[in-house]
Amino acid sequence: MEDYNKIIESLGVRFIKSKSIKIIHSLTVDNYYDVSNTILLLHKGEITFGEERSKVKEGDLLFIPGGKSASVTYGGGNTVKLTNEELLTNREKFLSSVVDPALIGTDPSSFSYVSFEAKVFDSVNFFASLDISPFVISHNPIISSYILDTVSEDLKAEPGRDRVINLNTDRIVVEIIRYILRQNLFVEKLATNSTYFKDPRLLDIFAYIKQNISGDLSNKVLAGVANVSEDYVGQYFKMLTGINPQDYIEYQRMEKAVDLLRTSKKSIREIGTDVGYKDTAYFCRRFKMMFGIPAGKMRRRESLMNI
Image (cartoon, rainbow, N blue to C red):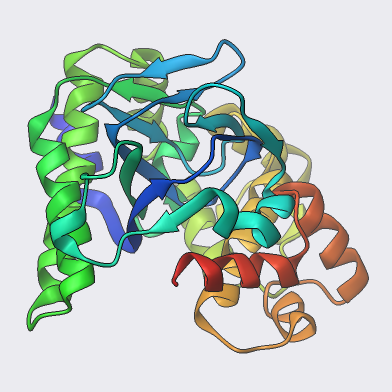
């Protein structure tokens, strides 16, 4: 248990956004994907997910780890299938944001959600590192209350809002991890992570990648950081994390690109350069391959989600 406490203490949690949503017309998004983690509370109606169309019951929670593509159906009956890209230009036909805190959860088909980042030593997306699929959290009034309070605070914009939201988000993350531990979920992956998060050479690599995301991150450079041979560094990294270093680096670069799309007015070319891509066209191709939508439309999606 002490190892899990260390992991929790090492987590840097950052609130991304929250919304309460009315489902106007049923839809299925086959390739839902976000670098942020999302915890969704179903108030009323139907939500299913995955290839087997697993059902979320009213009052239950659906957790979608960042970095995992998933099929999600909002509403029941006959649904319209859309890609992430198609949803951008048709969102108002299917989903509507609740703007009055008093109306949260009152619609016959509605849900609320909170999106957040949770990184170990401010470097590794903790839930993505577990390589887990979306799952349901049943009968958890504690997490539900934090979600409701976060959405309400976000809408009211009263003094102290940011502090309350950040505290709530911290508690949401802790409660999700507690649920995983109580239910003995992903035990082997948690045990593996508790080991490699203590490896000082690996932590040095994580820190170096974050600090030099726009620079040379070849295996030769990483080998120098970890003080191992260039031939061995890829094997060493994959042995501890389950992925090769260049795949991890690309994920980190794309995650940073999404953050810049959300928070800056930089051009796509500038963002590509900032995250280590000298060729803008190649950056755009890789971005669309990972997220299913072009970088410019990702920025538009974030803008629409904030309406």
